[in-house]
Amino acid sequence: MSWFLIILIVLITFCVMEGITWLTHRYVMHGFLWYLHRDHHQKGPGFFEKNDAFFLIFAIPSWLCIMLGVIYHSTLSIAIGSGITLYGFAYFMVHEVIIHQRLKFFTRSNNTYIRTLRWAHKMHHKHLDKHEGESYGMLWVAKKYWEKVKQDKKRNAA
Image (tube, rainbow, N blue to C red; front, side, top):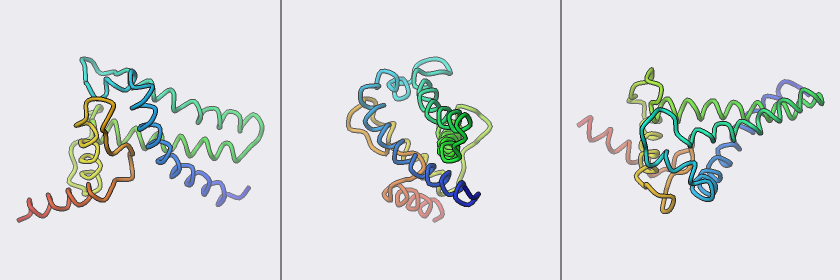
């Protein structure tokens, strides 16, 4: 398999993961596994949350794809597992570091994309229960949040 095709598969997998993340967040985390996700919306004491278990749950498919790909010499499986891993890293950086600032080395940014991500996530967290939520994705943000941030920037510039 050519390097171009491998990289393409990694990138396609990365993009598909945004849709999988939206569906999982909406129907699993805010559904039958709400008991693990609840403490992310209703913050309690301590650094760790039950919600952190999703890190392990989501790491399993990536690990399996890479491990089985190595065992059975399947470049396709390794590329898919790598795309999932890359998305997991991006998710960690965006969600834990940039949005929730659980690791304190990232301060607030004036970048429009980052401000839009943070605003959309804030709108997601205004809902404290599992129903009536919004903005379940991570890297793709709906147009209405972009417009809100652009309006705020114009208002602050004036």
